[in-house]
Image 1 (cartoon, rainbow, N blue to C red):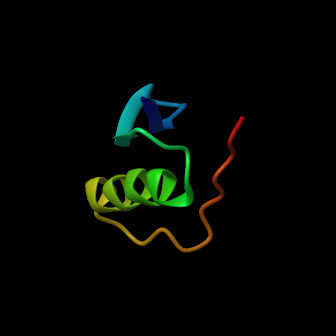
Image 2 (cartoon, rainbow, N blue to C red):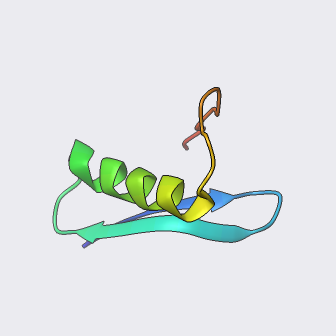
Length: 51
C-alpha cells in the first residue's frame, strides 16, 4: 500500500490523502483534489513541493 498525504507545513495539518496499491499519478492527483476541496479557496499560484 502507498499513501500520499498533502500537508500544510505551517499548520501541520493534512488537507488531502490517498491510499492505493500502486504508485501511479492518480494516487497524487486524488490527494491533491481532496486538498483543494478542503481548502475551499483559489489555489492559483500555489506551489507544491514533494520529497
